[in-house]
Image (spheres, rainbow, N blue to C red):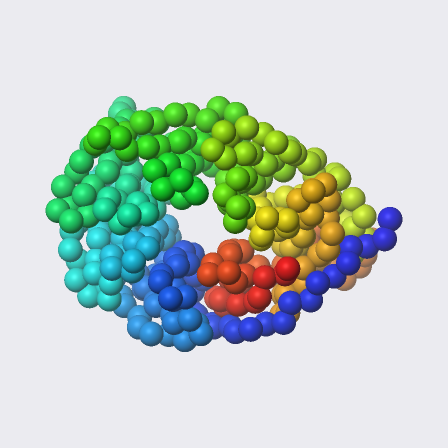
Length: 352
């Protein structure tokens, strides 16, 4: 088998910060908000990724766990979910409009907030007491009054992630217990009452994103399982591909440890899926057969080979695995955004 075709992506823009960006949140008109690892700083960028403002938000980081940042789709409100509270701020980050205090989340746990698409409600999760359950709450954005709540899972076990869906009335909530378990739940609010359905067919796979058509979404395996695609709104598995088939034909990175999917998969458009590998590679799959059609090569991304003891090596006989300088991969405002280990935010066109 020959090596994969390469798609070279020229760098469009980069910014270097003193800490790694951990949340990149879209705002209207192509703007974005960011916050950073272990720093109480929020930065707003314009459509050209130029800094509009930077604000220090004291008390939002603890024990090297970063706060989770959210914003309403109309750009009027910002939400910061921290270790011991959730704060709602105005669009400029200058005024705290409301605070919800709660017990402390454990390390690597917590949940970002979710603004409903109509921007009338905000959804968030509070940690339960030691022998209690975590609690989902829905708040009225106009009055900051809690509309309703719902008991979730055992406390201090899960990190939660909200996902918007093509249906304005349906939200997905993902609960992950480290590398041990992932649960996906479907949420709806009807007449002030939360309806929650656990999607057991999606157990232990990790949410990617929806295709632009809204008819499918892609999920990554937790370990050595296959990449999976589900229909929406039926949420029925319609396709899968094992990892050996995805990486078949790759000769660019010879190593004793095989490459695999590193929890991140994205629909780029209705016909192409982007896979982030354990080595930090970006593979473009054809939706029809879920085979790799090309390897995406963003300008400025570098790879280091490591031996079995985790030391860098240039000897091909001792290469165990590889790592690139990529930390996070995101598709925001129709562009590919990468964060790197040296605190950079790098912007590229999509590889299609």
